[in-house]
Amino acid sequence: MLPTDIGRHGRPTGNCLMRIVCVVGARPNFVKIAPIVGALRAEPLATVDLVHTGQHYDIDMNQVFFEDLGIPVPDVSLGVGSGSHTQQTAAVMQAFEPLLAGRPDLVMVVGDVNSTLAAALVAAKEGIPVAHVEAGLRSFDRTMPEEINRVLTDQLATLLFTTEHSAGRHLETEGIGADRVHFVGNVMIDSLLKSIARAVPAEVTLGRDLPAAGFALLTLHRPANVDDPEVLDRLIGAFTTLARDLLVVFAVHPRTAGRLAESGRRERLEEAGVRCLPPQSYFQILGLMRAARFVMTDSGGIQEETTALGVPCLTLRPGTERPVTVEEGTNTIVDRDPARILAAADDILTTGGKRGRIPELWDGRTAERIVEVLRRWWHSQHG
Image (cartoon, rainbow, N blue to C red; front, side):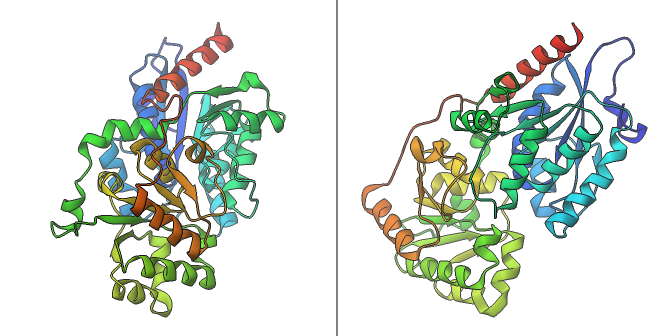
């Protein structure tokens, strides 16, 4: 059992229940864990303790999401905060290790952030099985910290839950046995489908004076896009050019806000007509995505959400670890090239852009399938 201060979901006397520790650390994790925690806590199979590492510590990036998604208050908040990738990973490991003294039966991690790898490393070193939700995604770009986190977490995991078939092929290539891999669909879409009726209408967020031509939604946060001044300035040039013909709504990530404050970049955007917003709640961003003519982003999750919503998406990266969004969905890779960005935007405004189709098992029942796999695994271990 976990320490007594977070043990209120503990194992009832006389019941053989699986004790699961679920770990979240950053905004995308919250969207993925919400339906899983809900499904597990509705089950007689398991007791669940939720650990929030505090990797995202801005209130707009975590507390609002917990409230929107109906996630219970975490049993433990580690509060590790910011730092370099190494510092943050080490801080999570040091803070998380004592929580495993009571030997839970499984540690579940989601996504590809530093907290994901840190918790998986600690659990593996303690001999506790790890389940990785969203396993097998690969960008094949080792300059991305997330790629390192994905590859290593998958090597440590006992149970690997995948969102698309390409992920299973990557895991097979990396020598991970098929008996550990389970294609269950995309749990982020569980949250989207459950929440879409509560999405905040775009006119509520933006005001009722929206232009008849509509708007494009922009998000940007990855270091390769915002930390290099030359790359960021090229992108800003594309956005300001686009804003001559179409309103661009920029939901500014806290990381990006600091970079925009340098060298008058935010002023350049706003003078060109780009509407800069603070971080949005989950229901606000859903409403903006649903209403947008198209979305420009470097977020993997938004690539998936726009595919589920049938909204064209332009990915501001050289590739994607989610190829199903391109092959079957609404996603187009435009890299960081202003000419490609503007050409793709013009095509969408002229033709309506890609509409795609919903990928297999993106049906809102992924959490149920994860729980069923866990049930089979638990019974195989305990008869």
